[in-house]
Image 1 (cartoon, rainbow, N blue to C red):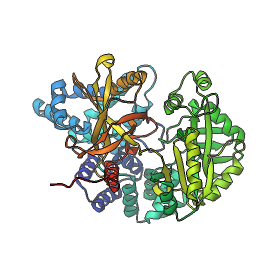
Image 2 (cartoon, rainbow, N blue to C red):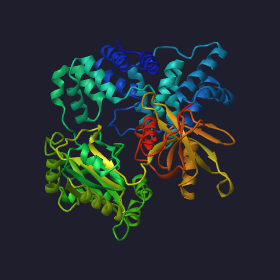
Image 3 (cartoon, helix red, strand yellow):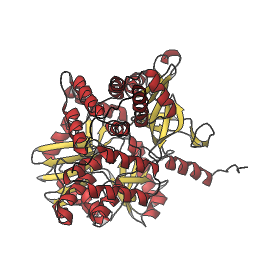
Image 4 (cartoon, rainbow, N blue to C red):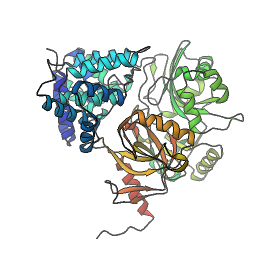
Amino acid sequence: MPTSFKLLADLCEKLEATKKRLLLVDLVADFLKTLEAQETEPAISMVLGRPFPKWSQKTLDVSWTTLSGVIKRITGADDAVFSRAFSSSVDAGQVVKMVFEECRLKRQTTLVERSLTIMEVKRSLEAIAEAYGQDSREKKERLVEALFSLASPLEVEYLVKIIIGGMRTGFYEGLMEQAVAKAFEVSLDEVQRASMTVGDISEVAAVLKAKGKAGLAEFRFRMFRPVNLMLAQMADSIAEALREHGGKSAFEYKYDGARVQIHKSGDEVRIFSRRLTEVTESLPEIVDMVRSNVGAGEAILEGEVVAVDGSGRPMPFQHLMRRFRRVQGIEDAAEKIPLKLFLFDILYADGESLVTASYIQRRQLLSQSVGAIPLAEQLVTDNVEEAEGFLEKAMDAGHEGLMVKELDSDYAPGVRGKRWLKIKPILEPLDLVLVAAEYGYGRRHGWLSDYYLAARDAETGEFVEVGKTFKGLTDAEIVEMTKRLKEIATQEQRWGVSVLPRIVVEVAYNEVQESLKYKCGMTLRFARIIRIRDDKTPEEADTIQRVREIYERQFLKKGKLKSD
């Protein structure tokens, strides 16, 4: 029997109200057991707040403006109704639910005629993604309207969250792996290995549902299917990193570039950003470089693409992002902003997965496989002074700092651990999300140029304000940012806009201070935007827990005022 979408919405509502992780896992595991095999993949993607599997290159391209217009037509709501709803909640899904409930009560009618199923939602989302070309916006609007017209207020709430990526249940991918292991009675290690290999837990669950534990033997790396990247934690110093690794470590330049995952099969090469979005067309010279130099018939490589000037010195990150966003005039852009590739890892070669091999083994194989493509500059040492000299050399060359990698570390996709560490010689910048913006004064009058910064709460998924800044962006960037913010605005006032948490920026600051102005009790002193991080998702933003950790760490060297 097809599963109704209402059951999935009910589950998400329970997850939002639950804080205990074991109970969260139990709720999802019980739900997974009830699904049909074909429903498993889309249901897991939706619970995790995604319209499609993680590896999919499909996009909905549906803005908040489009959604709100559809909702007004269906419900008859006006701007006043939306304003009242937004005064009660900043969660777009909850706002839409309130609008539906208020207007339904006024009209004394039910908008729902029949039960909406998970598979119907999947097909609708696919149709929305496939609507392109002339009149594509109107096509998407009609499809969204047809979908919402069949949904109850609660269902619309979660449809909106799936469409705009606003799921805030606190149920992240690691917990989903636990739920899948419990639902299908396999070990968590087996589930995690399979998920790492294919890059998406929803596909693992679908195979387990259809074939049981025997299906796990099918999982292999798939060419042109990007997988999650291994992540690093921050270390305060070289001495700390060496202590953490118990002695000798590999130090690599940390480039001020964009991390990429490169898949090669024969002459076909595709490149994926750290968000797992395909960027092949924007980087033709990197494609040619890989095609000409990589000897393996099939390979999955990882590296950093850096924009360089005529003398080979690295250019600011913003120049590089212009290349990544470019879809036309690529040859001209390539001439103005040349790129250089530095490789630092290999995950797969000619049918063999290398993720369980040690870092030092992978590095050796990489050096033998990539011809004239340079590898990340490296030093292997247990000497603090020697490593500090290497750090100084990296900084003099215009790079960000160093990566420190444990010599026997395997490659753990999607895992942020201490086997890889990063060192930056300045006070650690934070990746924060814009949640509102005010219009500026003087020459910035009419432009959104004062930005509210928020960190992600790792427990609830909410975005918590930690300050604001008007510093860091150029006039051209402010003009572009104004356009982008208006496209995701949930409320427009005379002072500015409140927006969906979509845009990530890297922020420098002098100190984390105590503040009664913000709910979190902290704020950033002298915050300024270093760069716009279009290569990062809001889910990759720094957490409020991390901000508090930095705040507390300051008092290792400073005095702290005693509370009354």
